[in-house]
Amino acid sequence: MHFKKPLLLPFVCCFLSVSQFFHVCHGDVGTAAQYSPPYLPTACFGEDQTQFPSSNLFAAAGDGIWDNGASCGRQYLVRCISASQPGICVPGQTIQVKIVDYAPTALSPPSAQPTTIVLSETAFGGITNVPLDSINIEFQQYSPLPQSSSFVN
Image 1 (tube, rainbow, N blue to C red):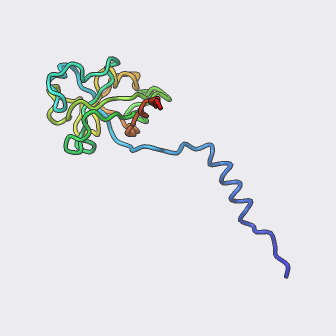
Image 2: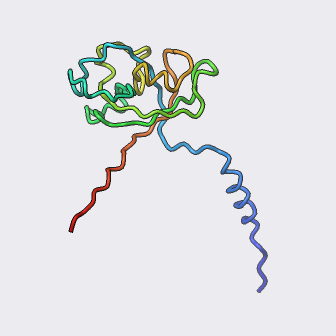
């Protein structure tokens, strides 16, 4: 019996070669707004000043990621993917933020409602070129790897 070469193989190889040029999304898509001081008290950690990272990259969770308060302390990688005006997003810039508050109850109102996440002024400015009410974002929960420990025998 004589078999012909499968015609599918060249198409699969071509698809795999071309697919390397396209971005594959590894996170969720949502919206972000910004909020200004005062930031205390927060729904997560009250009046504790140590809740804020020294980088001032923190955020308030919207209803979609609040998870009944379980999001407190979680960290997210966030990047701006689009806005209502061109040139707003800083290309290729991703920030890491810590959730310290619940957006609907935050002391300072967000620049837009409702949104997935409300970023501190510093965090919002880290991924945008110009202040705006809201932007479209890609975000992903980030879990830092625990530091390795040495075992003594």
